[in-house]
Length: 428
Image (tube, rainbow, N blue to C red; front, side, top):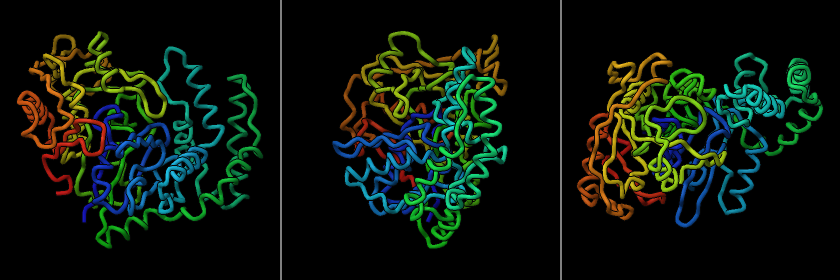
């Protein structure tokens, strides 16, 4: 059976949780391999809406083993809060597994994230302030705290004290903040030992054995291609690898084990935070997409910037990830628009670019070159086959597919679980 990966093709918020949920009943394991609680997935099941931030979306599907792998940074307070909230709603969370090698977000990571971002002023990156970047920085600097350290108080205390020797100097002398007490941090982390004990394991071995036993493993990226630390719009990116290559390092499973790579992409484009956005709209149409699409962050509540579909970006995502299938979401939001522009190339200082410029400055100054497609007025939320869609909606889908670099295998026509038009089997 296959290992399948789902990532976002734009700047996040494309509906990856929805795509994961679409496959949930057909897989055995759902793995989060990067990021932390800086992104959110909204899954609608019947009349119930679930907003997940740290937990894999597969935790909502009975029988699935949800896994937080080694590439994730874990805020233990958020983990407990989400688990408690799901248990109160009758969701079984007992199958959750957490990597012993995953790194922990501490109080000092959150504090440094917030004060550093404020200090940057107009140069702010747009971080969520949840300590993600500082935790990953400590990981790379080899001074991070891992889940396994919580089970050895001596090692935990040594690491926290060593980290705060320097960080408190920064907080007090540069940012004029109070020093953080090492004992408070250690005691806070130790309080989660009982919660973690039944779920911590070698998740790389767990997944290796699952694939050897012919189980289906689904990898769920946090964030998206254009926020990838290496391949996104740097420096306006996240602190981990959200592209397909990150799944191998983030989970301990080799790349050749991943058979299908699914990229989720909206029928238009959004992003949260700072950074270049060639097709961004600053008019009433941008407000229309924002309002009708409910474009407000699941985790932060921040309004998302909105713009038209960007085909060069889709092709870039297809190339970087090795996309086998696209899932197009929120097509229903476009109903009622008379003419729908699609960015087919960029104009950079009078020169046409059919692909994304490698130079960040060029991308920042890129002007979209649009092709117009006729819209439709019909409500498509009840459509379940391609043939039921209005002719102009069909033509729009096929046009995007032709210019995006991989086949479109599913189209979202509403927020609920069953509001999907399936064109191809995502697992074959």
